[in-house]
Every structure is written in C-alpha cells, then in structure tokens.
Image (cartoon, rainbow, N blue to C red; front, side, top):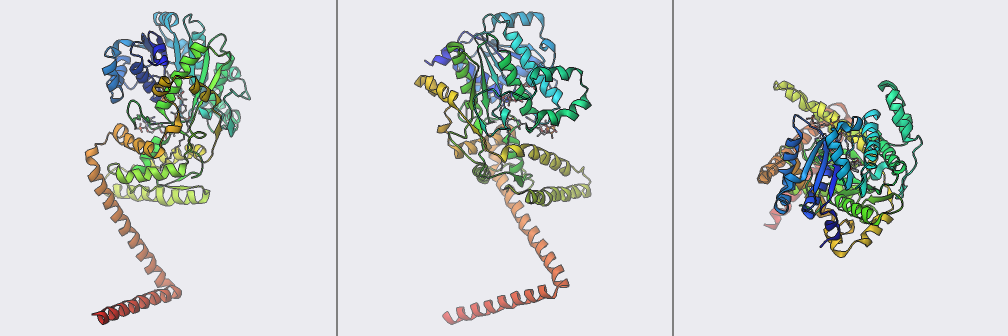
Length: 515
Ligand SMILES: CCCCCCCCCCCCCCCC(=O)SCCNC(=O)CCNC(=O)[C@H](O)C(C)(C)COP(=O)(O)OP(=O)(O)OC[C@H]1O[C@@H](n2cnc3c(N)ncnc32)[C@H](O)[C@@H]1OP(=O)(O)O
Ligand SMILES: NC(=O)C1=CN([C@@H]2O[C@H](COP(=O)(O)OP(=O)(O)OC[C@H]3O[C@@H](n4cnc5c(N)ncnc54)[C@H](OP(=O)(O)O)[C@@H]3O)[C@@H](O)[C@H]2O)C=CC1
C-alpha cells in the first residue's frame, strides 16, 4: 500500500480554498486514495445565493467526484463545511467551530487566495497576507497539528530570472504593509501601489511574495512547507484527463482563440510555457504534507512545482498544438475561424489589435444595431484585450526554477508512492496533454456536446468561405479604386491581363495540337 495514502488515513484535514480549482482536485485525490481519512474541514463562505451545504452538494455531484463516490460512499459525512470568511477577523468562525478546529486538526492545506492580477492592493493583502498570518496564529494553537502546507506561486519572485527554492526577502516588511492597510485610505493606497510593488507585475505576485515571508517569519515551532506551482492547467491523468473548471491562466485564452475572438497576441514563441497540470500539483502537495509531518525538516522547505527545467515546452509549440486541436475538435458557434497568431513586435501587435480585433467588433456591432439588436462585441473585445495585456508579462519571458527539494522528495518516495502520487513531469507528453486540455475545456467549461462537432466543422467551413469572399471583394474594391487613380496601376493591370490572355491562348493551342 502507498505510504502517503496510509499516512492520511484517520487524519482530520483542514483545507482553505477547497471550492477553488486546486482545492477541489486536492479533496478529490485525498478521498480517492485515503477513503479512511477521518474528516476534511473546509473553510468556506456562501456564494452566488448558495448556502455552504448547497455548494458542497454541487461539488460532490460534479463529474470530478464520480470515482470518489464509488471508493468512499460516505464522502458526504466526511466533509465538514465551516462558515468562514477569510476577509474578516478570526475569519468570522463560530466559537464552537473554532474549538473543534483547534482541537482536532492534524494537517492544514492553505490554498485560498485571490488570484486576480488587478485586485486592489488592500484586498490582495487581506487575503494573501493577513489571512495567512491569521491562519498561522490558529495553527500555533492546534496541539495535534503535524504539518502546515502553504500554496504559493512560482511567480512570487518573477522579478528574478533564476529562482531558488528559498523565501526571498521583500523590500518592505509584510507587517508594515498589513499595518498601513489599516489606516491608509483607498485613494492613497491606489496611488502608492506601483511604488510598493516595484518590479513585480501586479498585486497578486507581490502579495504572494509577502505571504511567503509571513509564513517564514511566523512559522514558530510549526512544521511548515511552501509549494510553488507555475501556471496551473487542466488535469493530466487523474481522475481523468482534461478536467478544468475556471477561466484562469491559459483556459480563458484558449476559449477566446477557439471561438475566433482572439486572433493575435503579444507572445514570444520561444519563451518557455511553464504549465503544470493541476493533478501534478496536488500529488506533490500531498507528498509534501506527508514528508513535512513525518520527517519534520528543520527549516521551512520550498518546493517548486514547474515543468520548464525538466520537460520544457514553449509558447510557439503550445499555440500551434492548440490550433491544430481546433481542426479536430472545434468549438461551437465560433465568431471567426480560429487562427491566433503570436507576435513579439509591439507595433505589429497594435496593428493586429486594430485590424483583427477592434475593426471586426465594430463591424459586427454595426450589423447588430442594423438588425435591431444590442451591440456587445466591442465591449467583449475590450475585455479580452485587457486580459491579454495582463497576461503578456508571463508569455514574453522565461524563468529558471531550481527543483532540488522537489527532486529530493521524489527520491524519498517508494515506487508505489511514485506511482500513486506521481509528480514527475518528465513523463508528460505535451501534444497529448494539450489536446486533452482543449477537449476538457469544450466538455467541462463550455459544456458543449461532442455530437455537435460535425455541425461546428460545417460552421467553420461557412466562415472560411465568407472570409475568402470578403477578402476577394475587398481586394477588388481596392484595386478598382487604385486603377481609377494611378496610371502605373493601370499599366500593371493591363500587363497582367494580357499575360494571362497569352498564357491561355498558348495553353489552348498546345492542347489542340496534342489531340
Ligand atoms: C492560441 C492560444 C494560446 C494560449 C496562450 C495562453 C497564455 C496564458 C498565460 C497565462 C499566464 C498566467 C501566469 C500566472 C500564474 C499564476 O500564478 S496566477 C493564477 C492564475 N490567475 C489568473 O489567471 C487570473 C487572471 N485573471 C484576472 O486577473 C482577471 O480575470 C482579469 C484578467 C483582470 C480580467 O478581469 P475582468 O475584465 O474584470 O473580467 P472578470 O470580471 O474577471 O471576468 C469576466 C467574466 O468571466 C467570468 N470569469 C472570470 N474568471 C472566471 C473564473 N475563474 N471562472 C469562471 N468564470 C470566470 C466572470 O464571471 C465574468 O463573467 P460575467 O459576470 O461577465 O458573465
Ligand atoms: N491557478 C493557477 O494558475 C495558480 C494558482 N496558484 C495558487 O494556488 C492556490 C489555489 O488557486 P486556485 O485554486 O487556482 O484559485 P481559485 O481562484 O480557483 O480558488 C480560490 C479559493 O479561495 C477561496 N477564497 C477566496 N476568498 C475567500 C474568502 N474571503 N473567504 C474564504 N475563501 C476564500 C475561494 O472561495 P470561493 O469559491 O468562495 O470564492 C476559492 O475556494 C492559490 O493560493 C494560488 O495563488 C499558484 C500558481 C498558479
């Protein structure tokens, strides 16, 4: 039996962010491999009109949990949803719940965070720094706690190009930032944000770096580890390939490209696309939980969960494979044919934005207005361009992450654990993975039926014909205008026509001779 799976049996595990992308996969794997675990406490809030119980019910009834329900029929009873809002003092947890958490918890996985790049600094600090500090305080009062695993990001130090598995100091102490958020008003915070974040690209990476520092400074006697995944993508293998349920990272852009909205993006084709499947991150996280609790390393170990140094793939190859997959598995009701191009030149990027994004949106909105409908394409396009501009930082650079700790951990695992908790990305076949990723987006995010593929292909053919017709008409109009204005263009035109005529005459004469 797997040593790691056995370790989690009988344990009470606390997870923050369990309703998020990574949190769900973490819970699924825990229940599937250690069905005898005692309980999983999930700190969560009601959302979108759903109570805690409704949210849990929805998660457990999703496709992701189908296998779990076979292996662990009592899964409903083993989840304890605890009302908590990480934005509030003491997380607004009731006294009884707090008592239970403090006295029973064995392992903590802290996944909750705001992952938005444009969150106001105050909010990002509250969730990614202050909440981490409060959770550590709670952890320090848990007599049975064996390990605290903090999920950070490989980009928390993306202002560096070579990143080691260490916590780097931040220019301003996290405590000072937390204190200042209490008395500064929003307008001043907005004004000083660019100065504070310095060479970090956004408030997300900045606050994740501060969060790591808090973890290191306040670790006390706790057994703590930090896991740093890079760009987390759909599942590779488990519980099945291609599962994804949110638009973060590449997923949103793959949809935009597949639906024909995204036609060009400023990206460096040779830059490393450091994508990592979510099930790989979860496997490493569970292995880290076990190792930290059992081996109790003297200091806080950082584990990079990245693919670039072991099995690199670049954005050019990834983009090509995404487009190739659209040929086989097109998305339904595309706006234009999928044909996204990478450009590393600023001027060309502006040009394509005007010609391939804004102009078609304006034309389409004009058509909607003419037919008495509400225009919406320009708004959607502006949103897409804002999103691409925010992601540009990450697709035009390459980073090198050292993975000594991660490799050390791999060597510590038994062959059975290496199989059950596989995080060796050298075995990943990118082409197959990307194809499954696109398929997963179609099935689980867009909820499109596979039976609709022939109709989607027909639709793309129609779009291609419209495209050719439109281009031919445009060319003829431009040419007609040119001929009317320029003697030179007229001469070229007559030369081409007479050349074609001569060629045709020669061709006809030679074919008559043969007969
Ligand atoms: C050929 C192709 C090549 C592809 C090539 C790809 C390259 C791709 C590189 C990526 C590189 C990242 C590298 C960092 C890796 C980390 O460590 S960070 C973790 C990942 N974090 C992210 O990706 C967050 C990025 N996103 C954001 O920050 C914000 O969404 C943006 C980009 C600022 C956009 O904000 P916004 O315009 O205000 O839009 P927003 O309100 O968020 O959402 C618009 C709509 O989408 C929905 N939505 C937004 N997010 C979600 C979600 N997660 N789930 C479901 N619905 C959502 C909203 O509900 C909303 O719908 P409506 O309410 O309008 O109906
Ligand atoms: N996705 C990625 O590409 C990467 C993610 N990471 C890290 O991995 C971790 C998980 O990310 P991911 O799963 O993708 O993120 P998601 O955005 O999918 O999930 C975030 C989770 O945090 C919870 N949360 C947010 N605010 C609060 C709050 N005030 N109170 C209670 N819970 C809250 C959310 O709950 P709710 O459902 O109620 O909103 C949700 O469960 C994060 O720490 C992130 O920084 C690191 C690298 C890349």
